[in-house]
Length: 195
Image (cartoon, one colour):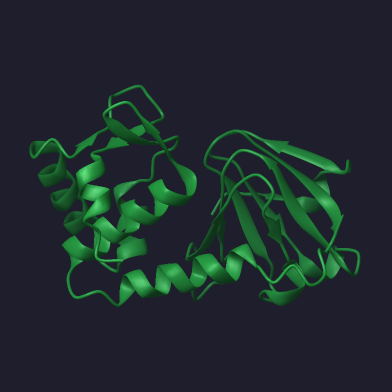
């Protein structure tokens, strides 16, 4: 896995471009602080050898990442869009909402649906509803995920996710133009999600 160590960044505001990942080591962080996404969309994943690459959450502007509650080996933050985050924000006490825990719960719910088609539909639904927007006749996600990553998220192989996405394209429920970062999904597909 290719990522930068967080300690390479000395300023309070960190900016990384699409595709870059940063390892966040909780032992090197000031007590009582967290990361807060300023702009962009990030994927938070586990760097541990046993679970390397396992997605824990997706974060967007205003979401906080409490590293004190995660694995002692740290977590990685990957920029799905150009990303900017504050590195030493005081943890919002009594906010009652933890974005990472909420995402982990939702991703776990997806994995327990009956078949891979339902899991893919639920995944796109949650991504669009939380990170996307309605744009004319389509719902738009501002980033792409690899077929391998989609397979990891829905508990299938890359081959299965490729087959399912090809089926969505053929049914004109998903459009992912070559050379563009966005993915468009039909609202009817999102609205009929099992979750």
